[in-house]
Image 1 (tube, one colour):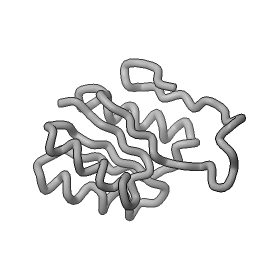
Image 2: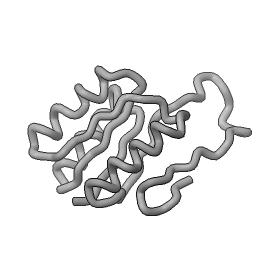
Image 3: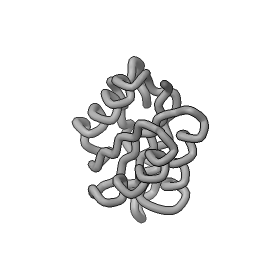
Image 4: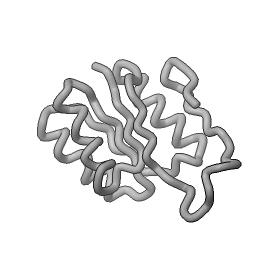
Length: 109
C-alpha cells in the first residue's frame, strides 16, 4: 500500500493531512517533535483501518529522517511527502541548507 509521510503532524492542518491519506487507501507515517501529538494524530486513521506509524522526533536529525524513510519503505514505498515540520521559527527561509531524505527507494530533497 502506498505511504504518505506527514511531518509536523501535531495540530491543525498538518493533523488533518495525517488523517486524509487513510480515506484514499494510503498508510500515513506521522511525525512531530514529541511523542503525544503523533500518537494522537494516528488515532483517526487507525480507526479507519490504516496502518499508521507515529514516529516522534526532529526532522533536522538525519537518523530520524532515515527512520521515517525506512518506515515508508517497509510499507510499500513513499508516494507523497508532506513536509510541514518547521525549524525556522522567526528565521528567514533564505540561506537554509538542504535536508536529504533517504531510505524510501529514492533520494528526496
